[in-house]
Image 1 (tube, rainbow, N blue to C red):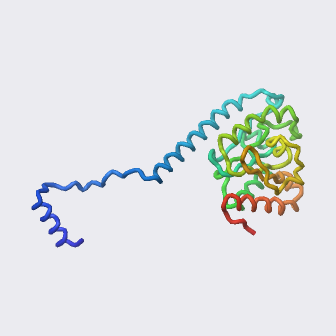
Image 2: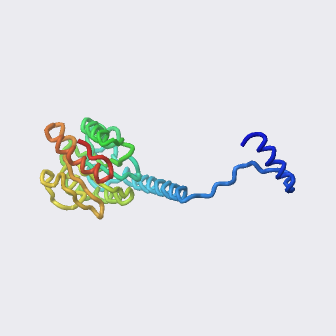
Image 3: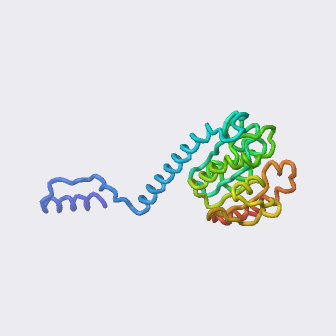
Length: 233
């Protein structure tokens, strides 16, 4: 609108009896998108709060003998509303010292795998079925797995991921309660309480057996496709 048109409009409005104009922007009416975003933000906040409450219980847990030898409880970290959740077996020395999951050499390899999936650690959630380090990185014992099971079970319930990737035999067996062999189960879709589960090798195994990396990447391509991304090459 040019100046002559504007002058005409203002003269017309004056002649119609308008003595002033309210040039403020009208208040925005909440849209369906706004409502959905608000609900999503509430859900994210609720999940984060629930996870924090569970962590407060876990960090003082003394349900098994690992509580006597641990430095820190390694609870888990990441997006509280992640579509993708990685579940490992138990913390190692580096994780025990830092209180964070997968921060050693195996953790760096897991980070690289996540990056290759065009994601970051902030996009996913990472945890272990056992929250305290077994001495000398030995395998978790049955009573330790049983004592920690309610924590990982509740984490999955809170996060509600679309896909869980289990890393190694103990993670798979403890989560599902079934005696799967990792070599035969990896790459095959399983189910855990309605959530799709992709078993694969633990990154520590890949450090010892680099030739198995191609198998893990084949598994991750299935995960990418399930989540709606490109399957990669």
